[in-house]
Image 1 (cartoon, helix red, strand yellow):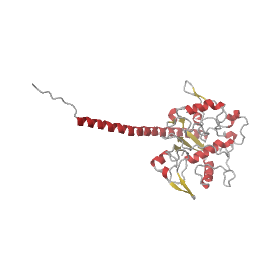
Image 2 (cartoon, helix red, strand yellow):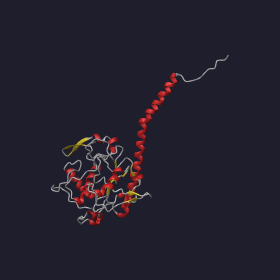
Image 3 (cartoon, rainbow, N blue to C red):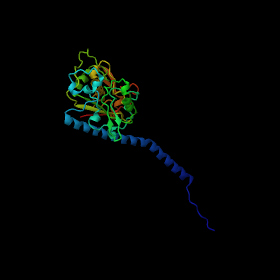
Image 4 (cartoon, rainbow, N blue to C red):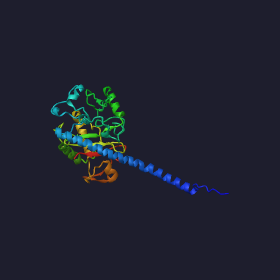
Length: 316
């Protein structure tokens, strides 16, 4: 009678296989999210560059980058705003920049890290967060209502549907801030003279206060801002100070945002608040002096002052 030898796994072999499976599962849990984030960052960088290319093409055709929402129209430079808000569309630009460039609603060119137009998650839309979305039609286009007055931050009944659409959106366009560099250099000196890290000063009684008129003749620089992996603008889109003329409040608030987005107070060639500089080049933890004032690179956000920061693209 022959004995049949049955082959199987020993206990040690089974334990070894289980250990290997556990290690692979652990790697998947830790490495997987990083790989997904890196893929999203690559897509983000590509989308930002494509939008920047479209903006450059617009500049070639018009000798200016498109105005941002809420800016005074060029032809109204020497005029006063209308007394009737229903006439705002003739005085202010009420078109989002992507609509003007015929890319409105293209999610492939939107901020993949956003989940609403509310970039700082405070449950409301500030001036620079608001950007008309409109109603999506069955053919994929958007019906826009440009009869609304310019948004002032106060959500009156006529704004309810539009604000709700923006708060419920799953993705938003990149934040777009165009400026005139000559104007910006003048106001930048003003803030630096006062060691103002967050451009929180606008006092016409200051002896060095820059006398600016809006709109400028053209916009020759811009920044695009993505919320980045942390999904937050970290205070880079400020609320109005309260001392700005209502007519020019969007222009002035945009200059303040541009100042913070391009800030490099320690002059090391790295943006103080950019995600890449803060996560890869230790920019977040630096301390230094601006004049006689001690300075850090803490973000302007009151809730996350030393966070990752948003992802910033500056036009060349």
